[in-house]
Length: 393
Image 1 (cartoon, one colour):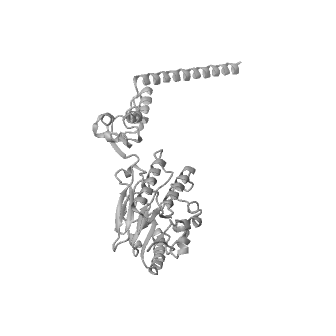
Image 2 (cartoon, one colour):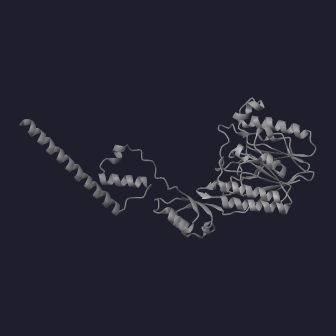
Image 3 (cartoon, helix red, strand yellow):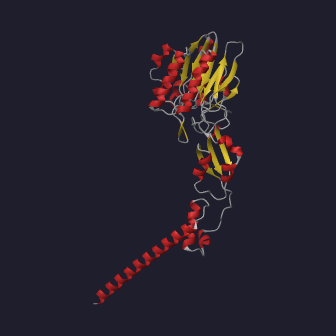
């Protein structure tokens, strides 16, 4: 049997404000072509199909189109829900779609019931919130590890009764795997970590949740997300696993996905970034730019985008000048009101000093405020004198 293992489509996700639906649609086109070219028997989607529980209409339409085309290609599609998915919404219509070869598993009741493809039994494990299912499963602890141990016991018992290979699908964080910035924590305080040994006893495990392709063990693999969703994924190679279980031993081939736009992280002073040939390959990339100028340049984002128009994130890391440990009184002693106002302006602009014109504007403002204060004081004095005379009379 030949399978494609994919996960973490996160349909509807944006990347620093830039929509990813076009890149995701391109990946799904690639997936359909891969299925046809490699004569794949089933596509395994290990969770986080959508990016949010309430996906937008265009996102739902994209998934609908992908499922129709995969079905037309004659492949079985097996989907398990992830922590970003709404189990109820993703699972709507699952029983109707099952006979047509689209198998969507989102509930605890479906765990341990395989989808059989040829001589291979695929056991989809939806994301299961421990606080909701631990008691029903008889877990001693309310953790993902405890829940998945119980679930895998159920799967191994069922698989032992069936001849052929067994494959488990899960959405989990396996201890020792490498994370990225774009994943939402499954739980806090280490309660979501699952030892890789939990998945022993089956021929292959197709995991989702982590966005970098990796293999905690040879038979336990993450496909990663097919599209990058954070600059921490700049070095990732995105794609899907092509798994062949036909021989005596399983074979795995990583098939790279198309890249809609590469990612680049740039760091340096602005003038150097705008002129150096070394950064030419970043001109068409999504860019994260960190400027190290001692003084923050004015109009920095506009200037950066003049060369790197797809810059999504601009950061500043100016060389530190050391902390000023003097008290506020010590720092302001002997400083004029004009100097203090200009110092504040420079502070909030992170090192950009006031120009001569700005100093003139502040000076005029202070003078006007002084005149208004003196006028108010004079008016108050006249009123006091008037009241005094009236009382004396």
